[in-house]
Amino acid sequence: MSGKVYLIGAGPGDPELLTLKAHRLLIDADVVLYDRLVGEEIIELIPDTAEKMYVGKAKSLHSLPQNEINSLLARKAKEGKKVVRLKGGDPFIFGRGGEEIEELVEEGVSFEVVPGVTAAAGCAAYAGIPLTHRDYAQSVRFLTGHLKDGTTELPWEELVHPAQTLVIYMGLTGVVEISASLQRFGMSKAMPVAIVEKGTTKQQRVFTSDINHIAQVAAENEVKSPALLIIGEVVLLQNTLSWFN
Ligand code: SAH
Image 1 (tube, rainbow, N blue to C red):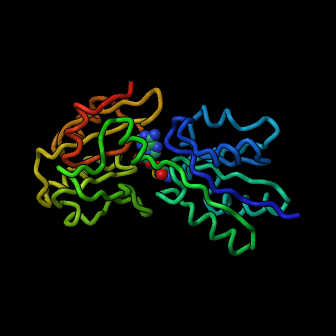
Image 2: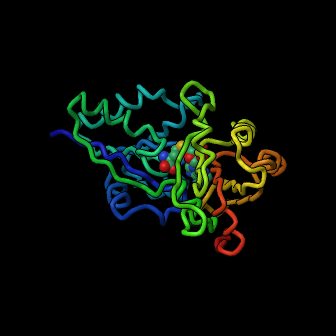
Image 3: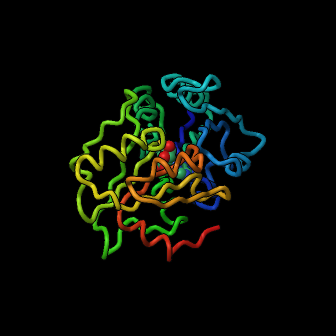
């Protein structure tokens, strides 16, 4: 009997943001492989009978390289197990979910993908920042501030565009460069920016500033990862719409 891999988005932190499907599969799992971004309270939902494996992030000593995670998933499923691969947010948004299931396809292992609340949606909601709003933004772009080769080279020109909200994942390390580049390509120095640290969790912190000062604000407040940058006029609404904490 062959098993199956469930690639599941755990959402940004608040355990109540797990979908019913994610929860059902998680409490029935034989093996759970999880990341550093999956919240503690979600890990606690894993039954004692399941084998729990922390596979962490690529750079950490206590974690597995991506190709080993991919083959471990396939191996455990071939042992006939129900394998849950739990990822922060949504598995298909900056989550390498695609890479993990490519290998399963190659090895003929069956799988399902369960979407999760991505950090952009979770952080925006819990910070009180609608990502679109008829008066301020008709489009929203999700970007990563950290490319595979370690640089932050984004299509700056396209990003300086009226009525558009930018959400930058993994943007904390590159915040100085992101802020300088956007201004160099014409973004107003006064463009509102929010930084949301540990969004949707009890430790959530939200700082608002403008594109010219955001790096300084992040440094002064010792903002740590995971943190999300939201850039655009919608950030002005945070003053009146903030509700969490
Ligand atoms: N697949 C995930 C993203 C993984 S990339 C998703 O869909 O949300 C990791 C980045 O996501 C972090 O560097 C940070 O920018 C963002 N992130 C994830 N969880 C977050 C949280 N709770 N608060 C703020 N940012 C978060």
